[in-house]
Amino acid sequence: MNVRSVVEHAFAMPLTSPAFPKGPYRFVNREYLIISYRTDPDRLRALVPEPLEITEPIVNFEVIRMPDSTGFGSYTESGQVIPVRFQGTEGNYTHAMYLDDHPPLAGGRELWGFPKKLAKPSLQVEFDTVVGTVNYGSVRVATGTMGYKHQALDQDAVGRALATTPNYLLKIIPHVDGSPRICELVSYNLEEVRMKGAWSGPGALCLASHALAPMAELPVIEVLGARHFIADLTLALGTVVYDYLS
Image 1 (cartoon, rainbow, N blue to C red):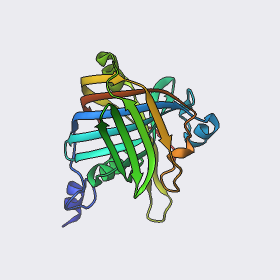
Image 2 (image 1 turned 60 degrees about the horizontal axis):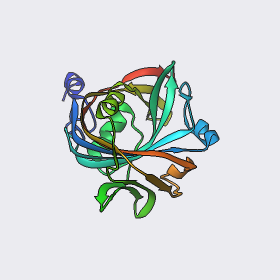
Image 3 (image 1 turned 120 degrees about the vertical axis):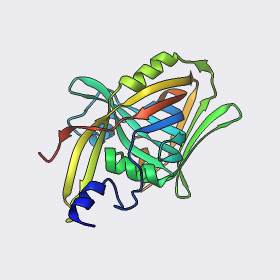
Image 4 (image 1 turned 30 degrees about the vertical axis):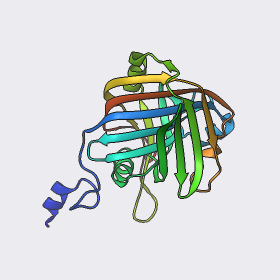
């Protein structure tokens, strides 16, 4: 394979059989459990990178079931998302993510800079409760629960928030000598959102300490609310909004 062919075919690793296909990436029946909670503001400030600004000491614990996603297959994902402000605009910063499928793990890290690690999240309905859990190996590190469909939410309002709120990631790719080759703040949006249902209910969240899945570093002081919703949407590609190496 000559140099020109390498450049023409280069998209993702490995060169001749990329771990994930090119987008766009459409998700059908994407199901969310989001539990919002108040945390320690000092610990939050220590983890959110400038130039992002913290608006309130709030974290959204999320578990997302994705049964039908273009090129990525069927998988479940969980993480912590922090409300922030960037250049006067309110948005969300993804602090940590855990999932159980290699193509979206590789694609999420390489394309956008999602902070993904391999784990075993789960989202299901047990009797009258929506239950979201995260196991890192055999160790349970998070359990979130919500009353099932206690109150309907305004689907249009939830959909607008999904479609209009910018999301931020810190993309880091090292050089071969271990120094940072890419260190960028990336913004992305969700597009073509079609809501299929949205509800709220009483919520609870328990985080357990773990050396390599440190979600409990942002401790739960007070649960503020819980939401459960289902939507179809497209994950748009990103834009670099700040280069830490320039």
